[in-house]
Length: 205
Image (cartoon, rainbow, N blue to C red; front, side, top):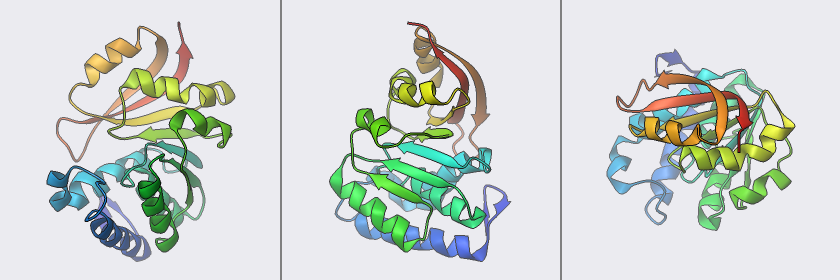
């Protein structure tokens, strides 16, 4: 099986397929993603989420903010399991979604843990990370605020964020308060989407 042109093992394929089955089961009672996108689960959500890990396959410790339906956090955790190392801390304050995420990690034998806390409280329970991911969560300026405590602890921390067509406006707003190096990766799944990779991040005001 290939994900975005990258071959994965049969074991990883089986884990992803099991995750998809769990997702479809739980989505009948919990609003995990927009209902209109469920029919295109593999491309719109699973393959799209896999891009995050594929940009930084050697990163050891991820924090995924607002993990919701498991994108990209659970997908990253499954792909880390193939590597045999690494860990994802998934932050999701909604108790029902957090329960879903825990079932996914356990049954898919993925490398991660779920923290059912508000994002603002997460740095108190997650001390360190190498990468922060988020998808369809908040504007860039707010995501930088959320990430600030971890930035203080690790000057080499990078943010790897899915963004839609309005990302330029978000960048302009964020640059009013933050300085950072930026790499824009065009999505290989969604034509109008990008993945923004931010590093050397410093607060201005």
